[in-house]
Image (cartoon, rainbow, N blue to C red; front, side):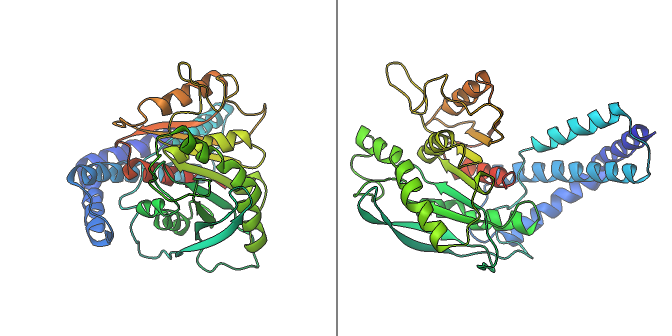
Length: 353
């Protein structure tokens, strides 16, 4: 009986969407986008994609409401129906669409401000800088999970400002789709001369400085955060993610310290994690894995037109598949840019903690 009700209601939703409801929702989404966009312009192609995503999201939400109404009728579930419900939940979890203007200021949301901090690094022998985003209303009376968000090869602790993480995360918090969290945006170039866009950007020494960040993070920055801020500890409260070279380091650090980082995100991750021709990788093919029984969440995102890291995100994905490591992998429109990186951050944050 329940299956018939659900089928009928979902069919009705689809019919309504084709006869005008879907178009009305799309037009409202465009209008809302035009009113709320404050920091960046959306191209015609991006707006069209966002409208389509808004329609799909509206239809998905309506279908979900229909299912909930049918369940409220009190029908007895069979084992088969329970299996179908579980399958739908998995499919919903693999929906990587983003809402219109997810990086913009939205009505009803409050936003934490990005602030610069300094800490002493025994690893580099210097005082280092990082940016910090605290939740609105931050208080020492509660503990917050922490996301470490890493920049790319030419950037520093300021690069993620171009991705508006404070807006993306605060909008998700306001929508009840993620927890309040502390976000740390460090300088991943762990050496004494850590200025962005250095002259030796494509040298082994520079790559080694990024790989050295695992020591600075573990021995200096994380202890500083735990000593000075109300941080919830444990892998279930600690995440690491990054773009490009920062994505490479997120994979390296996360897979090297799975007992510390329960969530690992890599948006257009750079090469170097695995061997390539005669070059050694940070891991062997067989060694790119997690401990048996691990419940760590891993997400890898690829830009469909990314000509910089090319097929490396997919290579990492296929290697994890071969090694039996459960993870998220998806490809989205865009290249090696914040179009993809912001998309990845939204979907990653939505699934952590």
